[in-house]
Image (cartoon, rainbow, N blue to C red; front, top):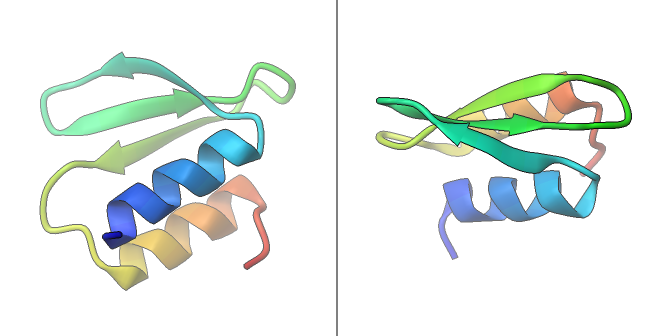
Length: 60
């Protein structure tokens, strides 16, 4: 499984839902907190994953 898919799975397991598709990002939204997180589609690496999980408040 690639880094982006693992990140998406972690977001969804923690209450985030896919809100919409942009040109270069998929926007995930948490209805409980109102927080939105953009997840880029290309050139996604472990640093992107680490940053997104930190912004979302998910400990791994």
